[in-house]
Image (tube, rainbow, N blue to C red; front, side, top):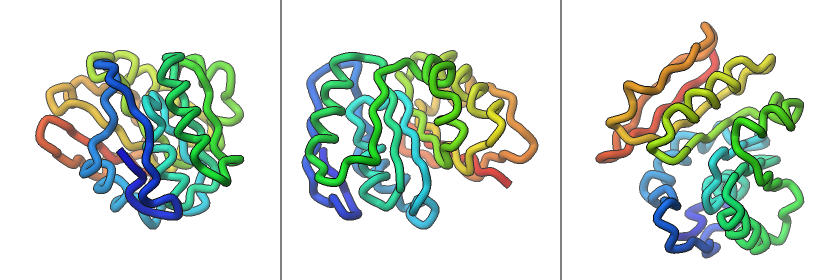
Length: 185
């Protein structure tokens, strides 16, 4: 697993053999960042449910001015710390060892400034995804973009109160995986 483009292209990132950890596949990651390429520069990017932190690190590599990575699992957070430590100019990448729901309770001001959210929770925790989406869409400052990675079979279970100025731009199908892109009008 490595950074696929940007200023840290080729940087090898650590993972582990934890069956609960399933990093986004490189071809899906490449597609996501092809979509975001011209929208990410100088933005604040948050990767919730960080896993290895690869999506947040990729965003930073491609020009995000600040990245926040949230991960609840202590062991996964240690992997993210080691991955971040491989970057020389890492002062604008912040790891928060917290559940996504607690993140909004304890860091709401910081979350209000996020331009792009990437959500890839454990696939079986669809209720956690829905609660997180409700927190995001109820913020005073709605983000410009929300990207969600889920199992295609769970797409009809994603239920949240979508504000009128947020719309589903497109759904991208990658076999069993579905990536949904929501944008602010």
